[in-house]
Image 1 (cartoon, helix red, strand yellow):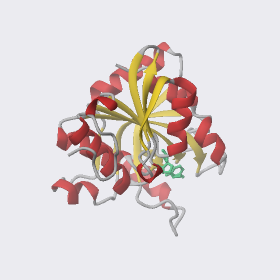
Image 2 (tube, rainbow, N blue to C red):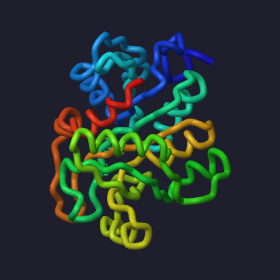
Image 3 (cartoon, helix red, strand yellow):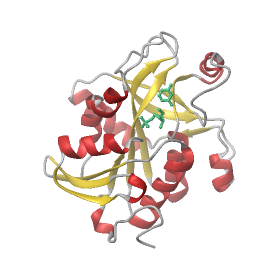
Image 4 (cartoon, protein in one colour):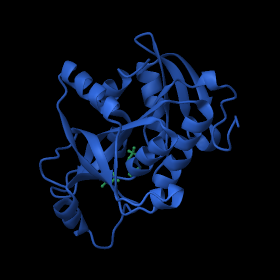
Length: 237
Ligand SMILES: O=P(O)(O)O[C@H]1O[C@H](CO)[C@@H](O)[C@H]1O
Ligand SMILES: O=c1cc[nH]c(=O)[nH]1
């Protein structure tokens, strides 16, 4: 079924086996403009931009997920199921739940805890935790070490809600579940990878901190999280 309702590419070969997936379409465009050569744009449906190019001569794609689990649930499912994508590496921003998570720090999500009903509704999966793919995580750890970029390897919180009425709830989520940071997509991405027999990982850059109240600008979130991008780009085929 290609093109799909949400991805306009007319041939599977237009999309690499490995796709980097930021939430922000303009972060996808920044990566294509800054790091890729021989770039072809394969998607503009709903302005969810997708590009394929080469990095150091190796093929890779980058496409936005939009924000939240329903959105990444659609895009990752279509990429895996209909475009034969094997690996999706989310490259997102996150809010730190402990003071140790400094702005610009990079986190590799070992697993994602969530109160979301996404996995239960999607396939009946009834646990609050889903792991990223170990084989991808091992590769990303090695790359980060080779590039001498420090990386936290931790459990993260995938939340359906950005603005909670009870701001302080994050403390319980850290204390009870061990989540050191919050974002809004990985739980659904990891779940889709598992049900479809594919691989998924998530790298995050700390864009704000709920303890210290430090935060980056929208422009920094779009363009400046380059350490995470450089690690992920080395996963090109
Ligand atoms: O920067 P991205 O990848 O969009 O990730 C984070 O930023 C958005 C919220 O501002 C959510 O999508 C969250 O997961
Ligand atoms: O989901 C997110 C992403 C960045 N910062 C947050 O506080 N939450």
